Length: 303
Image (cartoon, rainbow, N blue to C red; front, side, top):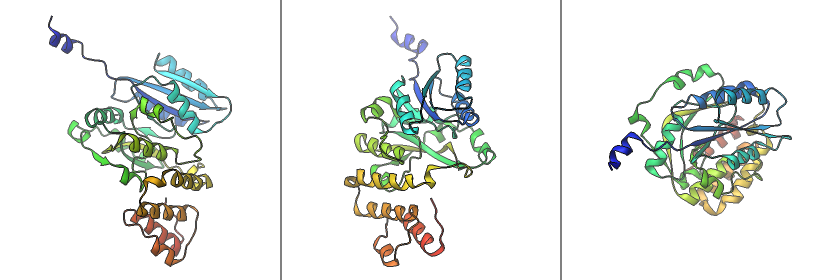
């Protein structure tokens, strides 16, 4: 029996990747997000859409995709809005993949994103894999980046992301790829967090399973349309920051705590005395200190 020949003729199937997409009343944007997942070069993907009580044609849109791609879609619906965090967790509960990643309904992927992250994960065995991302307000701003195909050598490059660096800032962005079992072991996203749920999850993954890796290639595009209400402009973001610090303070050193205090000043539109700013200077989080100085002296709130 020639097992080597059999293995060559019948290579093992690629592991299934589950992609969760929470959505509410944004069917046109949802189409763009789904299309970017269907265009992935990775061959085995399931797409789980959790509909947060939409009153537009979201259900019909997902049903159309499901008919066109049998067996590839799972549609879940909350009859009353329960928040994006609960929607993500419902998808995670119903997912079947070896790996899992997410996508917000107004964002989209580069076609090589999942293939790149699965390869990095399998080669480096990190807590999670992620990539650099680009904000945009009009798709035309990132079209050339989306359409550019990257070679194997470029996609094989990595940047280490250890817990100390992550405790200064969310360097992973709003989506990562990890094993589904790990997400479930950690209990999914913390639904008690009013915001920063993604950042909180990445910290828990790195704390439990070790360093992460990041591709330096831009493989994700995040909609920054200021005409729509965004959680980052609400008081919930500041509350999420406070809960994040309380939850992970044991992991932070003094410099990291000063960094997050500066972030809170800017989010709360506070202008502390200069002496307080000097005492709160963060070396590792120097950007937060610069943002606070700009806010105090020029009224500019960044981030």
